[in-house]
Amino acid sequence: MIVTTSDLFEHAYGKYAVGAYNINNMEQAIGLFEGNARAKAPFIVQISKGSRGYAGVVMIEAIILAAEKMFPENIFAVHLDHGDEQTCYDCINSGFYSSVMIDASHESLAENISTTQRVVSAAHDRGISVEAELGMLGGVEEDIQIDEKHAMLTDPDEAKEFVVKTGCDSLAVAIGTSHGAYKFSGGQGLHFDRIASIQEKLPEFPLVMHGSSSVPKSEVERINDAGGALDSSARGVDENEFAKAVELGVAKVNIDTDGRLVWTRVHREFFRDQPAVYDFRKPGSILMSEYADFIEKKSCKLMSSRKLKDLRDNLS
Image 1: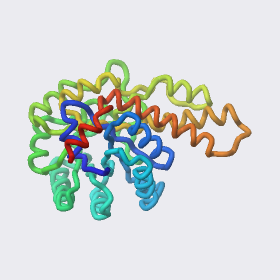
Image 2: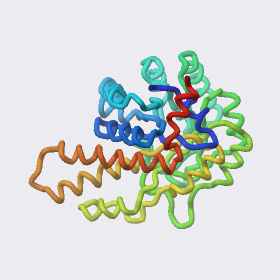
Image 3: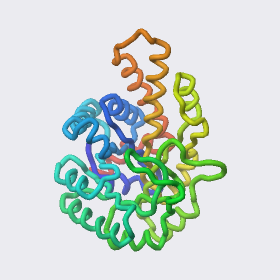
């Protein structure tokens, strides 16, 4: 069942976070849907502009619809991740997406507000939820790269002004996370004091954490043992901090890098151990199983497991 992110956040707020996972192909989609079916957890399928270009708009939508038929018990939103204004309009007009993200965070506050207002107006006319972003995360997100020295934490007063003026349904905030595998160094981490200040200004309003993969050390080590060359200092968000973030209003947690690490580890290990094999379906089958395991475990950390029945009752 496809629902809006607003539907999900209304049920989740203060109790759990909804996992939002980027997909690009069939194997990821099946693993995502199977893992959440096992966990009985609601989730968000995220499609980036890059994914739309890689798989093709028609193909990526067909993959999601096929996965829905395979796992009809699932409840999820279909969300455009980090969209520019035109891509948001394309997705709104497609009739397929239930949620879009307009990312104008690189613009001035006034321009960000103006752009978001236009997208919100178009989306709400069709019953589609809108996520916006304020502040600037460092790191790499597909073709967007923000140097850490240019990253900016979200200002709580600006956050209130932004939400009031734009009417967006959720807000991605910069609170110390960053995109990609190299998130923290030394004693850096999530700025819970900043999240608390934003929640104080925006009580009951759903906040979103981007760049929230955990980048497990074991995955990095296994990839490197199989011929990879990832920096061993790669470090992500401590999964045990999700619970505290939920208490402070975080209702959506974006996870992309961890899924890429699973894909990379499975394929590197398979072809290292079986160099004579050229049937791509064999590592693909392993990936679907491993990805489902990864999703099921992540749902537990987000506290979204076993929430499906209550959500379904709430929606009916």
